[in-house]
Amino acid sequence: MERVNSFYKRFIHMRVAAGTRGQILLTALVLVAILVLLEWHFNFDFSLGILYIFPVMIAATVLSRWQIVVAAAFCAYMRGLFTADETQIEHILRFCMATVAYAGCGLWIYQIADLRRVVLKHYSRLRYEQRMRRRAQEQLRLLAESSPAAILTVDSDGVILAANRAAENMLQPAEMLTGHSIRHFMPLFHDALQLPPGLGDISTSANAWARRGDGMQIPTTTWFSIYGEGEARHLAAIIVDMSNEVREREHAQFEQIASHDRILASAVSHEIRNLCSAIFVVASNMERSTDIAGHPDFVALKNLASGLRDLASVDLSKKARIQLSPVRLQELAEEMRVIIGQDWDDIGGEFDWRVPDNIPAVRANRQGLIQTLLNLSQNSLRAVQESPRQRFSIDTVLHEGRVLLRVSDTGPGLKTTEQLFQPFRPGSDGSGLGLYVSRALIESFGGELRYQPANAGCCFVITLLAEHNEDQPADTAEER
Image (tube, rainbow, N blue to C red; front, side, top):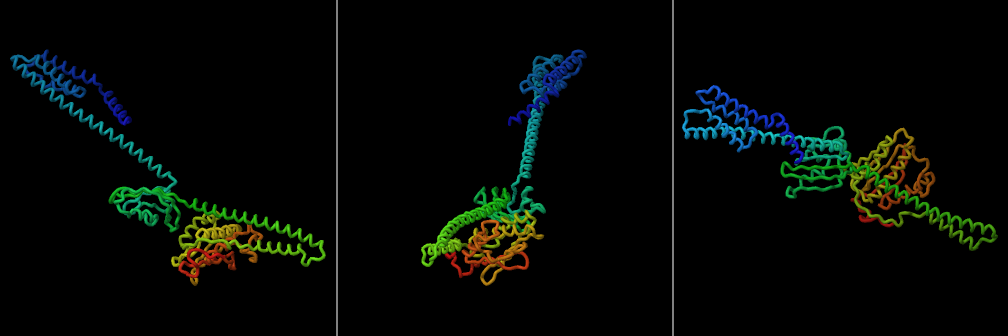
């Protein structure tokens, strides 16, 4: 409001600069003086009274109402000075009638000027508000266009009215989003617009999957509001792509499991070294003895060797009891595309996993299955570094009530498979427990992880129970 008042003051100042109050009044007085001199000098037989209206009209543009009446009375008095052959009554009546006529004309001019000032003031306010509105709209447009988050506006029919550049890059890079149905990209928003209008305005947040124009799904976090009634009902949303966060989270979990594997391997190796040291001591004592049959040291050696054998053959899955639930592979494929797809894109490789619609849900632990596939992907990433074609694919088929996942890559393949699933196998870049733990996890689901020879590359097959298969208990995997 202060800025508006300042603008009005500048406008009035400009008007005063064009013709000041004093100049206008001086013009009116000069005009009156001219009329008086003309009547005094020429002594006309007729009256110039009608011309006294003009000084009053000129002065009325800068005078107030009562000042206009005074000016009218002054002009009427000056007019009466040169009127002869009038009685006192006629002179008073003419003076009153002239005053009324001059004042009426002056007040009429005053009203016109006042209305003009009001119109100009209102026009100036509208111009100022329009300029401020355009500035605010431009700032909002720049803010929306420069935002890294996708911003959408959707009408009551689910048609996208507006979308910023980030929204187009996220959902449909090849063409504009405006005019398309939001149902294809964000079914959550379409369902939200179907809520009863009686709920009023809605403001909330949600985690949901968005579908790109090419059919690929991405995890998102969105904040949206629904406002208005009837045809004016709209939805405004801010969408953030969470693919990097999901990928980093799963990789962090994988690294954590790998770290636990290394800790376990270190602890087991420490115990093995202790047992081996004890064996060497006992063996040294035996070398100094000639009769070893029934010798206590010999018996101790047998016990130590038995303990070493038991320790080396510990099955990590014996005490595992994992909660199982139905896992839809169609959804898991989209999630894995987010988790490991970027890793293969970074090296210029390919990742492909398309699950047919007729594949039923499998009975497994979702996180354990993700970690198994992530472990196989990491192994393949290291294997295909020198290959001319770098590809990692998963084929899904249904066979006799079980779902088979054939996980293959285009690497050089395995030279030997004798110690493939054994713990602490030589040649591993990690602790040597990756495949061992992965197989234990799959077996805890009632499934199987095995190596399948291939003409080129490396191939593993994961066998899982379909959800409708009743051979396996539904709640948990049995202790193995």
